[in-house]
Image (cartoon, rainbow, N blue to C red; front, side, top):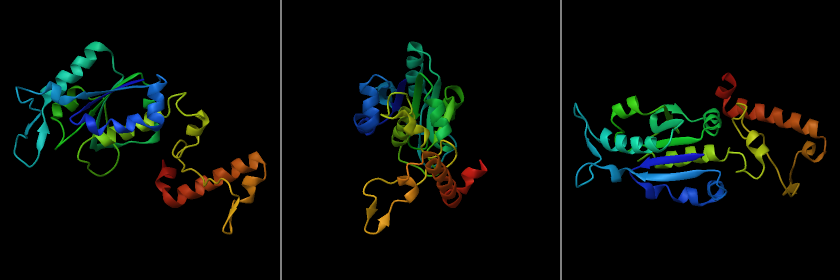
Length: 225
């Protein structure tokens, strides 16, 4: 998988890709991540990227021309399965979306800034818009890193145990059940006997029951889905 991230602040993005699973995926050649500084496509000697919005109002807007130049340059080099815009006014990222994107080969992610991007960028180039929650960040870089992490970890070969991803929260619209490890007792708190029984069908049944109970208590909306 190749991911090209278009950003006003590429320095905000580098660290997450230099550690843990994303670094492993890149080192193993399972994922490529490239940062493109939108400033390189800015207009005039000052590399202008933003301007006041038509109709008045507070906040600047990223102009269409620099973004169009960058996207079209990338499109001339390869075909992209998705061009994603990270924005709070979009459908919220969920596990099903991450699963779907993990099957793609080439993706562009455009990160927003200020009051966002000229609507014509969204109309002409963007194929999918994603939010990471009902709140606003300074820019879309951290949101893009979260999306990449959610997607890249699902690529076969990235996780040490590929079955692990299949039992994550939200994969089956349930939260994960409680998990325990050694010691079996700590300050009077004991691991449930069923998990020490070796009866794996019963253990699986217990886990399913607990997953349902936790989902019903914490996120009942998932059961409606």
